[in-house]
Length: 130
Image (cartoon, rainbow, N blue to C red):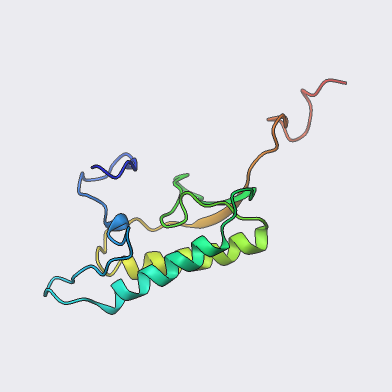
């Protein structure tokens, strides 16, 4: 696949529809007409991207697989509250996208905080110098 996104192990090799709306184009449904789902994807993506910040320390991830969910896969957010709003919008986006492909992976989206540079891997600090 030419989109540059890795697939999880166990995928069946089909091209994922997650980038169908990459340029916010309306994707035709199987009957050849445009759908309300396609018209919904672009505005949701724009809302998520509007919440993003280059310096944000929060990001979204699937709690089970560790995958970064499209369309927020490259986004960071300034606060946990903003990231939670983005998570709800991402779930709505993926629900709409699932109408195109019912096999789209179901993600349990959670907010994670980027560890500070130089932070100990052991949160208890047992290995920290004294």
